Image 1: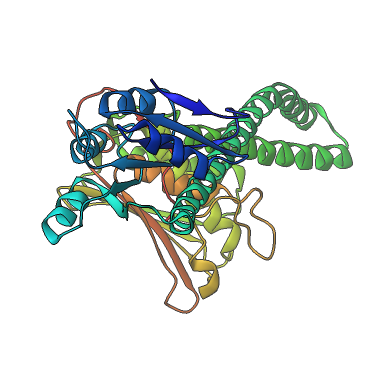
Image 2: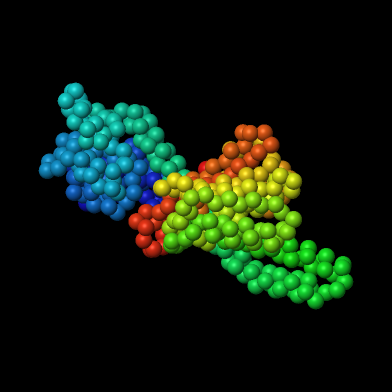
Length: 387
């Protein structure tokens, strides 16, 4: 029969004692029991396995010589089950521990041996170590669960808030556009331009937050299909030219730029890189964009602008919520999202800022994109580490 002593089974740590002699079980329980430590006892291997199915234990003290299933056989069964594989086992034996016996015990999964008659101080010292390790591990697991719940709640709230913000923001953008078309007063038109620009920036931030929450939650979907990457990047460049008529953007397309990609996601990548280059470059030098399809297995996009990046900043370029000293990068999610979208296509992002006065960002993706088979089944992509 399985015996247990526990003033509070919900919070106590359990230790299992397995011995076929009742007097030994009683003695071990008397030595070990104290507030906060629950002692389970079993008279053989079968009852021990039943106890282990019903309880989580910090340590198993197992007698070696038992009728039927001996201690070594019980340890081997424990090591073969997922639930009990990591439970520390201390063998208790009255027989001398020779080299062969010791080897078999450690091979079966023992962490230590105790000789009968047992020294109470040695017993308490060994048990206390494993009880403390178990308690620390349990506390760490609890903290991890709490952090995961908090993170999940935060991401859900971000997704809900950003989704709900789109409707009033659309109304603001529409109003600004209406004022630009119908207003005749220069001050009104200037205010409308600033309103439209601010609404556009807020919309970009909302999109980034939604993408960030999807990446973290593993809910971002990549839907590859045959596309012309040159046309995708050309469309992005056209939109940026329209938004900033004074911007100088030089686009060059080389080779065969057809591939199987998610055009929307890759378009976001290109838009982010070119917009960053415009923001941090100089109007005199402009921005140079290259779409290179000269390789048979992969496509490469390069975006170059005048400028520099401090060495200390290069190590954190693709981390989320990274902002520069100027604070002009909004949420600091742009390059993180770029990196994650390219990773979803099994590609890589690179940066070259070694040449003085020149910064080059780019990415390379295989022609098969996110779908290695070249089919059109959508692929889900969860959050990965940042570059």
